[in-house]
Amino acid sequence: MNKIALALLIGTGLVLAGIFYATKAYAPIEETPQQAEENFTYEVVDTDATREQGLSGRTSIPENYGMLFVFPKKDLHGFWMKDMQFAIDMIWINEEGIIVGIERGATPESFPQSFFPPEPVPYVLETVPGEAERQGWSVGTQLVLPL
Image (cartoon, rainbow, N blue to C red):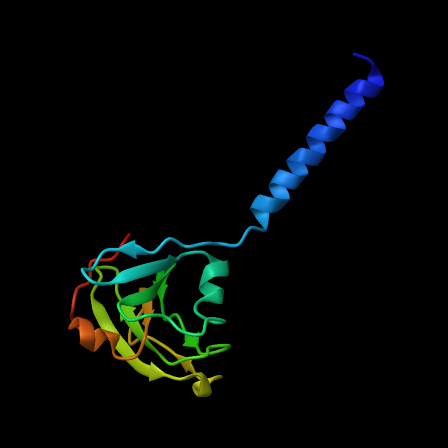
């Protein structure tokens, strides 16, 4: 194989590899909802980017559904309603899956106020307002998390 053909072959390979990398690196993140509690579906977000995005930008979520924020360590993780378009409940969950606090009906108008759990937690579940009551959950309830 001559030098020109070899250079074209290598160049084509590099271009194809770059295209493949670019489409994978910038592809939208699609979380797969997971079932753990009966009659409830979790969307797990466990990276900095997905936790930062959260539910902002969405116009609604259905009942029996929530976004579960998973942090690498328990802490007093603060949440705010920046760029939110609907009210939510924030359910604070400890490492054993036990609900330790519920912030009910946080509204977009509350921004820039931040909401914090009553103790350090590794999990926060955001749901539509009233979901905990519909599910029969309260402080002390242990949830079966999809982890």
